[in-house]
Image (cartoon, rainbow, N blue to C red; front, side, top):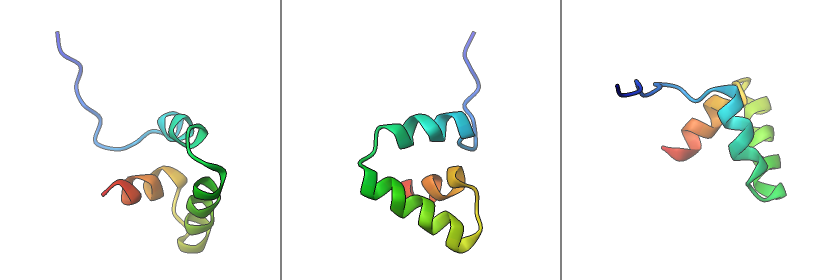
Length: 49
């Protein structure tokens, strides 16, 4: 049985990613999320694309 891939990044997954990033990148992602009023997980998705 195969797991179905998720279409969107979950908040829990976003937190795991953020923990592993350098502080300055984390701060920049949070600043961008606040600036455009998007959830942090959406901003991380945008950064990956």
